[in-house]
Amino acid sequence: MSITLTDQDQLTLRLAAWGAVSLMSAAGVAGSAHKVATHGSLALTSATGPVGHVITKAPRGVKYGKTVAQLADQVLPALTTAMALLKRQAPAEADNFRRTVIVAIDAAARSQQGEPSPTMTEMARKITEALDAA
Image (cartoon, rainbow, N blue to C red; front, side):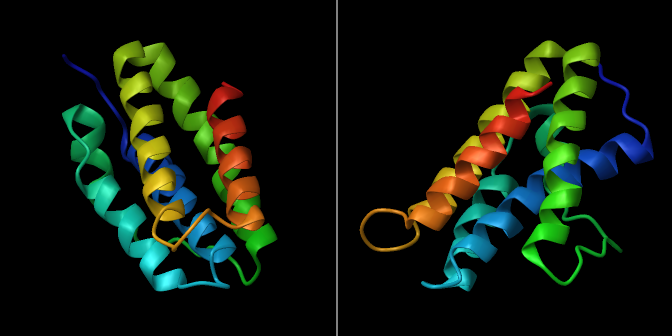
């Protein structure tokens, strides 16, 4: 499968995927934010296909802001944009991207003992909603 992504497209995909893990880490701060980020990151670096080649690297030079709200203001729209971009260029890769992000947020949520906290559950819902908005 051939897909052409500009540098900006690749940055959007990386910002969306890695930002989703960062949002889950922020939501899981009551437990172990580090463990949440580690599990989510491992899922992203295990991605395959053209999407996997792009998101295996975290975005460089991105300033996420000082609050979770500022982070969400960047990441949630990037998730929607990434899905729209991939749906236009390669629908199968859009599905791959969505599944990869869902696996990453599931892995992040399960990094804590017991059920995910209500905060993490709500963040996962917002991420999924942004993916499905495209």
